[in-house]
Length: 151
Image: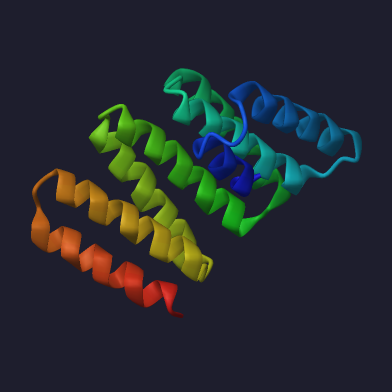
């Protein structure tokens, strides 16, 4: 699903084609009761709507992805859902809520020793602090992101 987003972004597929593919994927995952896969697919759908700048729809769908991920217990999906919701708030310039979601993803990832989530959350926090012109904090989080990614 992630690659599909990038194929769309490069204009190799039309949005309607990608959206239809995701909706079919959602139905298939519901049919076979693939809860964890359903969370992944909902995240893809939410990110497509974020890319289309329909932030309300993106936020609603990503919240649903988070709810499903919590039921499934997928550590990576829970962390990624927090991050994706935070990105929606970030592009909407709702910086305080974006920062809180990135911190929530970071704390969750640290608690569960999920290095990919630690790296991603620190990278997003670096972007946040850079936007706020708090460069020492930005660099600190960027350094942690680099270290975490290599673990």
